[in-house]
Length: 308
Image 1 (cartoon, helix red, strand yellow):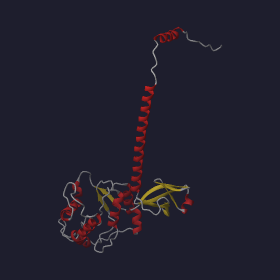
Image 2 (image 1 turned 180 degrees about the vertical axis):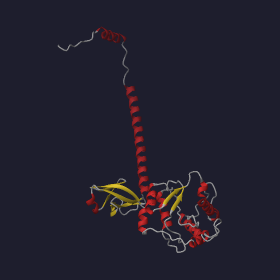
Image 3 (image 1 turned 135 degrees about the vertical axis):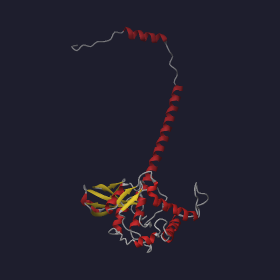
Image 4 (image 1 turned 120 degrees about the vertical axis):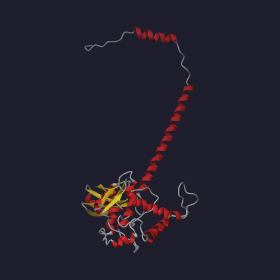
């Protein structure tokens, strides 16, 4: 949301937990020109004011802010009134949009079947923002957000290109070394013939966590190639899915090993019990025991001499 006009520059709806990768497409939409002609709020913000969510305090967003020359300012933790404008906007959505949609439940778990899909709700939210919220008089400014933005004469600052913006927002930069068998990352090998001339060199890779089939390789700020992972080629696999699959596999192996360990322990216990039952008890002879003790006492210790 633009602080001056209260106009919405971008939004996103998702069931996933907040993360830098979930925030990046929303920031991309807010910065770049929209496909809808009447929605012309865009540009790189001079100051990006937000809370202390993990998606905003990430190293990835710090890199993006530095590249876009956008200042990051965080509100004070535990002080909701410092984010009053965006919180009031959420309240407006709840009172003027959500309460009238099918399947709305004010509190508690939802009742009945889902009556509105996520894409349908996103379309409803976009229609409300553009046709209602942007055109209605704002209670604080007294001017509709859309008209206040247009009257300000603001000339938005845009990135060099959409591809450059995508490279910053939708990919994550990591430092790696080129090996004879390619670039190793997240347990996969990425190959390209161009890398043969850079074996042993340190490079910067950029990858899209939503699609791990390829990475972009840079050497000394210069683009080299797109390296492909043969195992993931032709598929769209997110890093989150890879991590979830590996976590599930580790848990399955851990349970299997624990079950086998319990089975082995049970078999050993059964074997020990059967062995103790089969062996006859050794009779106790007090005479022999007494003779052995006397023999040990009467036998003098042997001495050895160095010059023997």
